[in-house]
Image 1: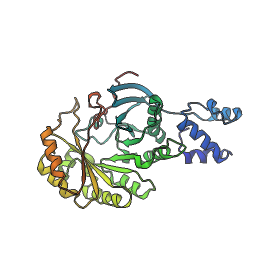
Image 2: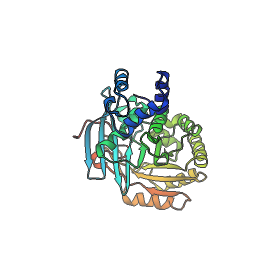
Image 3: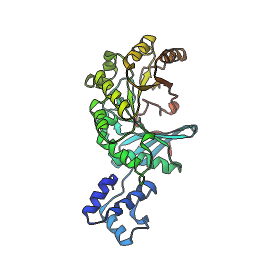
Image 4: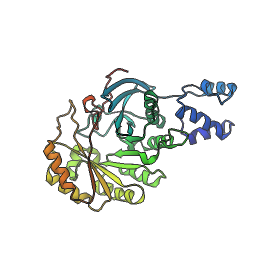
Length: 337
């Protein structure tokens, strides 16, 4: 069963079954972690056999696990075709966040991101994205409070699947995670932001800006050559006014974009956009040459931005030692279950 609830209803209605049958099966899979039809006890044995002969309950499998204390866990997940992705569980106070991947690898090749080094193997289906959350919840025996689309891949070049996953996650008979507890992060794909704006979906939107200078952005993030800042900023303002306040993420890299001049440019660029700013000190990776700025540089940049009307936060990245933090995921086969 690789369907959203709506798709499952259409499929089973087409086979002559009432709508509630799809709801029963959907709830068993997503809320009760059923891996086979035989355990669905509120469905007749005959009907369970019928479903078993015609459908397969597909999902992801845990192939590896690495832990950084009790605050972060990185899961290596294997898809049906043997392709691997990584997901991250983060504990912070009372929050339990799962960071999901929407692609195996990434085609965008941002210079400072480890995921871009491996290229794109394939995009994930909606059920594969949602099943990362279900699988980790089942493994841990607890429900997560928040989901962030900040793992491997770019959500808005796979937005049909991402929207389908959001439907499964937010459904009260699915994973039951409120959309206001869900954040979709993008490097700024104009077509995808437009699609989200036109949809009925209301989630938090984070845009990985990283550079206030268009030329530098194009140099370090090739996707910026076809997705101009002026278009992204216009859409971001509209999203903040119509749906939820946008967050701009700024990965601050030593001697690249960490000067007060860069901070000043960022303030000017965002001055008319209701938004939050997340400063993310660069998470170093052994295969990349870039470095985290000094604490003095980070603090100076942060202090300068406080003069703006924006809420500014320095994100404390978790999982750096196990290469599970922002920009470090690469699908490597490491760790044990």
